[in-house]
Image (cartoon, rainbow, N blue to C red):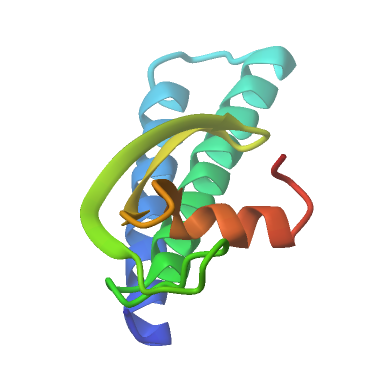
Length: 123
């Protein structure tokens, strides 16, 4: 897991990329309309929102650790990371999640599924 300072540095780097994109597009014309300004602002905001969501979801997942099977309570086997792409209100993003499998119950789950459901955003 990253420290708060490392997270801050990572997010600041993402913000600098978004700002550089705005400046590059803004400097390419002499006159810019209100609609173009608004589009630049919204695009930069969506890029930052997606970066925050992606970064914090990855941090929430943490490292591989043991997970109890919700059916039988036995320790599930860590089957490695799987990538999931999703579209949120903040834009397109992906997270790599650890997949766990219980050979006794033949049940599989991703650790972040519990986090998303706990916040009331999953089914």
